[in-house]
Length: 335
Ligand code: UFG
Image 1 (cartoon, rainbow, N blue to C red):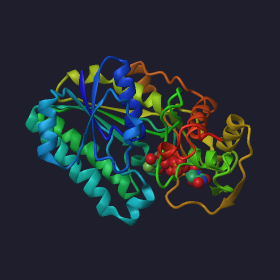
Image 2 (cartoon, rainbow, N blue to C red; image 1 turned 45 degrees about the vertical axis):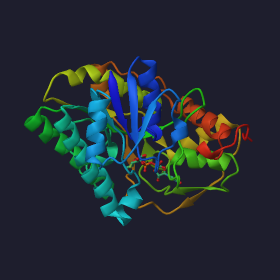
Image 3 (tube, helix red, strand yellow; image 1 turned 180 degrees about the horizontal axis):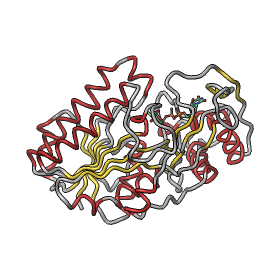
């Protein structure tokens, strides 16, 4: 199928593009390349550089490329930044995404796979979090995701859109080949930062709080491999055949992992020491967030290929150690 991958040069989008090619689909990437990386994409794929909010361009591309499904990965995704500049987030994640939906409606393309986030749950419900937990976002970023989920619901009823919505828990890891991986600027995520410490690029990992009511006092998260996330997207295609239906899935390995356990996993993968120190809790962090993904397993036959943290961190280490400056790394730069 011809799939428009909006935000396809980003971390999760670029992994999904490779899977689409591997499974016989034709991905066409639409990305403004501001936060994504052209180097994350295979040479075989058509890349259209453009803005999500450019109704005319998106509409043209949908028709010209005979798009059947849109995958929407394009979003700003820093919780802290969203609190400092909410307009940026609502403009990019909401207003421009509305332009995308309008272009889809007018072009007669009504199948969409949307990247949502476990962040929509805030701290209102205890883990494990299933799809029946109520959204209660506590950041501007979370509101943009929850709001777009609601909008898709209305669009399904009013215009017959069909959608698969995936709420990712902590997307992590990298392609097993070591060719592509995570490269955010600035980097705020735990695993890449811990790896930067192992690589000697940072002196010490700041652990944000060790006084939570968790087994070792640090926060629990559900780290799920980026290729497993991609696999779920493709498995959902048959669900899109029925017009007017929305399917929502929480995606995680269902295994809570603490910050200190990540330190241990990185030390194991790298055979290096990760120095750390304790800092105060970070605003907005919930003590524990992990998934109940039984719906994805039962309905889609989704089965994570990287079910344990060591296998996930091993792929992340391979990517970061071979590309210590991300996509800006020179060949053979590995330490
Ligand atoms: N952490 C540290 N030190 C760091 C970075 C993170 O101790 O330098 C801790 C955090 O406090 C948290 C855990 O590591 O307990 C994971 O933090 P990340 O920043 O890696 O991930 P989050 O759980 O905050 O983020 C995830 C997704 C985001 C999403 C967010 C919403 O990765 O995309 O949940 O809560 F927006």
